[in-house]
Image (tube, helix red, strand yellow):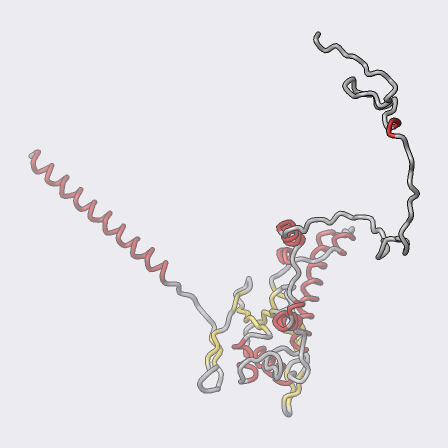
Length: 301
């Protein structure tokens, strides 16, 4: 009886261990697959052209109600090909979506975004709105105060014998000056295609490209070093020894010697008068005067 019970326990323990090992293996396989694979939905714009540009995998995002918005930029190669059926080029013979009408849409989007924040601040203030809040600069962080989209007006465009546009379009709230998130609809995309195609004669703003062109062509346009870099360069540079300032004396080319030699008159003196009181005589020096008796000095002691 005891042996049968022990066998059943061992069998159940083996089954439990096998289940644990199988589950751990499944979780490891799932982690490996998630690290190497990512599945997502993408919007594809299909055009009637053949070959290159027939399928445009758009960069999109959804608003709070699930509506998709497509990212449009003036120097996006896919967007440029969609509008012009040509490859993008910058500089001379520029081929891009950099047109003044595109800049106008971005300016309208920015103005609508700022106005939405101001309305939100006024509604929070009630009957006594804060004047400082109304005058302060609007920032990207203020997007939490308003809806995630605003509406801008699309002007009418003449296309052949018909007109398109003249309606409001949803765009995502933002203050960016280079990107426009437009609601993804066939009507909106066709409007943008005609807007870029007809606006090639009047180019828009290209401040960044101009700065890049100057930087690449001229060494003077390179960015200046910071103050710390300048201080470090000056500190590490070897210093030349300081020269002592000496007074400048103007000397003549020759000394003022006379043209003829100078005659010095002879001086007569007595040999005995050479020794003076200031220079006493030595006791061993004989007396110069012949009439004076020699001084006897006893040196035996």
